[in-house]
Image 1 (tube, rainbow, N blue to C red):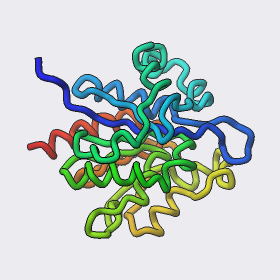
Image 2 (spheres, rainbow, N blue to C red; image 1 turned 45 degrees about the vertical axis):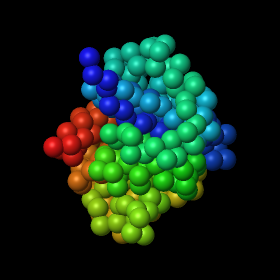
Image 3 (cartoon, rainbow, N blue to C red; image 1 turned 120 degrees about the vertical axis):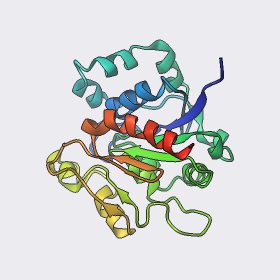
Length: 235
């Protein structure tokens, strides 16, 4: 049997939500839903800026109660062992092109350690310029905002994208807890930001080999969209 091609999931290493005193991390649904879909076709590798345990947002576990996919994922000891022992991003600093996709799940954690992460940006640019897919959901797209291609242009400039909206951030009273608002950042750097008609509605955008999802409700379709984009790019 042929060896599965690989996808790199880049999780946050950041577990504190600004100065709120609340824990944060990666968001359960936004990793579990796409990873479950993609694991049928690819080998999922988990990495984080610091390596080792990637903190899980406890609020996301509560929010996912009754979601069979998420509960199965979180109760899978093989998967969770990989997440408790993620690869350090530096291991892949020159290996972005080896993955069929680079995927950034959300949670507020990425807002603190992935917006300006040069190694993550390098890996993402390598993958994209090798014809691979780059994908991010909810707050994960903050990791795409600083990615520069070899021609000096920002990866997302002029591309249609989505991600956690300003109104959604307002509705959970965390506008002042994050370093930057994702929707605002996208607009400032020349990306074509779009969102669902209503807050918390499902929204997934595919612009060539860039796939983005808006929020937890978008996580499942986000996973399917990544697979479709990989298939399209490999034809």
